[in-house]
Length: 443
Image 1 (tube, rainbow, N blue to C red):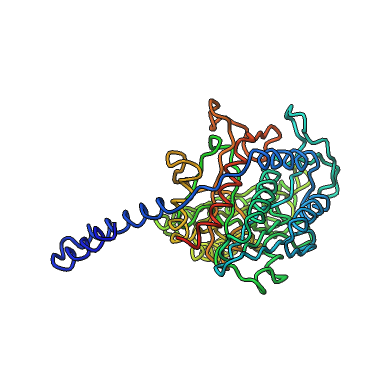
Image 2: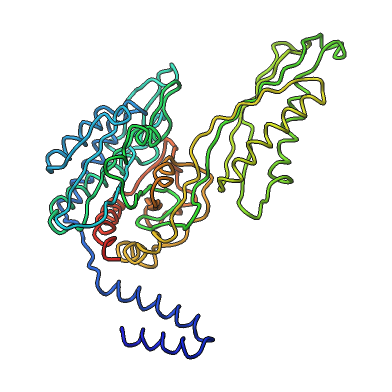
């Protein structure tokens, strides 16, 4: 194989026209050589069953963001039993395990999120949640409606397998069990951002961070990947439109903030359609809440608007922030009103390092099957895995969980009370983590 590679380079030097073909050939040969030299590490049937049992237990005992006490205790006990260095109470309830391999090499971080959602489960599985929690001062049902129970079980399984072959590992593995991916309760900090703020990567900064999210839009075992931007940034905005109260029969006696607010809503839509380069990256600005007034014949003195911004480019994100404020302030002023704009930055764009994606592509294809690995469409949902990937090269993929024979397009989506996960996907997810760790130094 090396002889063929050297010959291709020799031809390229003599004949410049052949240079591009030589490069393509070298890449193909290198991927082929890598595939030949890599071994698929499959987990045992016993470990697969254990992962399923962990998943069911966690599913039956879900906990809301920053309240993952039972889940964290289960994880910490497991990692300690494997002989790892374990940190607890990171970002309130986070757990971090550190496994030192038997050979020198890079440090790879693997992440799973632990929190559930304020959703009342409506599935008929025997381990369905009946848990009750408190969310924004109200009593609510609690359910793992986004699959974080699978994420935790998968990473616990990967930790067990990798610890059992610790001497074979070139480098180190950081196991991140993160709270509050769905967002910390009002008035609290949490999630990936707080873990980093508390020094997650200070002592052991990884060379790469890898994450998996189960996905009802894919058939069990399929993998959706994308180089570059995968998931949108997510930001919340508030606009307080201030006018002057007057009687509805005499609008000229005051300043109508309702009309001004309506004009702001319409004009803001021109930001994406007319003011930013939509060929660079898609974006969405949506209003989700309007409050104002108490009676049909009284023009109020204030209207409150709230909405979300989604976008796939960090520079365009900043442009939208500035244009939103400019548009709202000047539109209100044209009606004699005032607009006070507050933008609350949320999760950044989830960006997959292209080199890392390609580096681990042979492994991903070997574990899931080449035909089961496909490029994912852009997702306007957001993920705080993005904070890790802003610090070190990151890769985040979607793992399908809708059973074969069922159309993923009609399956209950993530966050639905009917959300269902085919547990056959647990094996694929666990083996992805295991093989990514083992293959990264070789690739």
